[in-house]
Image 1: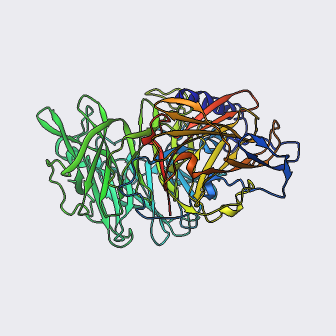
Image 2: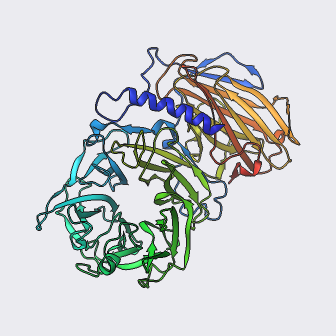
Length: 624
């Protein structure tokens, strides 16, 4: 049901974006400000009794973007069972063709820079021939495209074209961008006219060095990583050695993945490959069969991350001889100290084609959770794994119903936030040349450790300023809500902060699912006027429960039934007596966010990994 509601609501967002595509810039999905001045009202309820509204000077309705500011490296190692991603619907964007290079933009890559700004690289065609970049300070407003690698005539008189850029921001703030170059006229015949090119910026992308060849030989889709030792690593598809031996094969190009290393910040690389047999250091390849008496290996389009314990995880796209594609993973525990031989399968610890799909990308949160993105069925997908970059079993489709994708990428843009970029083809096909770019952000939800405190129940979250760990809901509509927790000797406290451009009495609700140790779970419904219902589930049966003793204070920013701005909404502080829910120090929590907008559209939103009827899938809230 949630997926169906997502498709409907995201389709409405897409319709609104595309209908506004007459002008330049990123499509603006922000609703206009309300004509009425917003009002801020505090409402206090105990059970179902409401006091007269009281005026207050201000109210803090914090966006999820300012919460979860604590950084705990490895904080959730071994505790990722309920960790999940939640797409932030408000961040979904489609770039217009007037803000790209026409309507044929592909292969985006996003990086957060040393000064906190962002840079995005992309190419002006499915195979290039030119690479551009855009910059932003906030992921919302972007500069015009600037050319970075532009095609030209080489010394042999053929056209040198560029494609598939990736980049890394080094410890010193330098940006290293590496892309493929190739001869348009002699790509299949002259592997020595193809290779990898690099540029550097020392001023956050304002200026760039001259281009520099770092590898000679046919290759594609590199990945740049700086190891914790400071070593700069460039991973590449390693097909050139087989072309040198057997020639170019149109059926399948035997390949694996290899590495170039730099000990001096990218000034020089080893091995220094300038001619046949074009061999770098092999790190990952698998045998997929024989063709015309030749052993064929694969594992291409590598992307690598380093985990907190020093393990390097590599994801590759693996193609079989009969053109079936899957995602493979490999792990190295010694920084690929010994290269593979030309016919050796490796690394030893690997999973081959464990997911059907193409175009993988990897990322890792400070807290330990790992992410794998890929495309299957023309849709961009993200899976979450554990701190070992294994167990990728939780999948979300953040652009489902809105965007198709050939190539996408991930970038960790805050401690609990990942931003994705993909290309977007409204009518996907093998020969499609119409492609825009999309982007959006997802927030990390995981088990929390909350504080012991006794907040003032006034609906104003100001006294929660030192209690910032939160869960987030907001993937299917503009309405979104964060949830924070506290306790003292008498009560469990929950702060629900809802941002909603149109507050609808009786329709907009937060349904809180609570479970402790008494073998029951409870369903507490809260709206813009406080507590609406309290129910208990025993043995799979719901019954209404007396809510006397539950206190709730609501502070309203905006007017009920009036369209407001992006900061419209309300803040609800709830106190639930410990004895009413059998609280003994640990709380299991799930939630349902109900929303009805002015246009009549109605959505229910729940956490992507939570089954509201299965308590063991709910988030675990502990208290310090």
